[in-house]
Image (cartoon, rainbow, N blue to C red; front, top):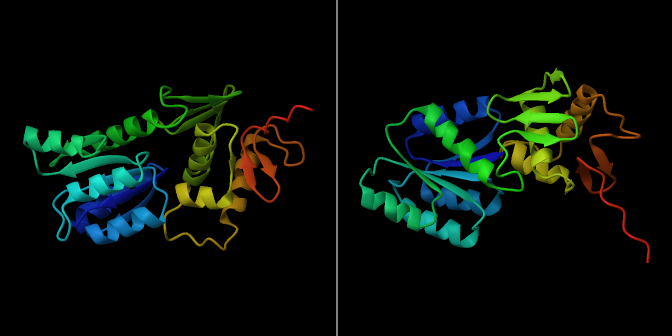
Length: 231
């Protein structure tokens, strides 16, 4: 999952990004509204953490603008504005959740997980399942039958993205968009390297895959695309 933080308190933004990255999320930071709007328009984010008291643009205007342009973007407002009227206005402006400063990081993390669970096809399943695989985004554990898999953060994030989009053919570019941050080099073979490593840990055969299928010239799919019925 790829997140954007729009926060002008750079120490706070860096601390949040560091904690979220330790949980396996890809995170970009914008220090003002103008930069945040630009990043949100050129990149595909799953969730936005938005401060309201920015130096150049009011966060509520950013919230309305991005919600109107991309209703699927999850928005978590993080602000010192603690009046009930502020919360109502924030939620009515398109935010999905509202958290008042000061806060505990674990609460922020729980709210991020809850919002991401509500999105996509697996919104009601805290533990993702596909065939004999079980993935728990909260504890960051993956089980293959009775065997626990030892995955790196990137391998876990790739598998989680596949399991949230079963049957979908996912391109390398889409994986870079959602699993890596904006510092990733799109011209490297990092996606192929991590896919190869993940397949090895799954015991998958690239020639006759049980889990990750390569769709030549397009990308990868967790489950083989359904065959088209004959006319």
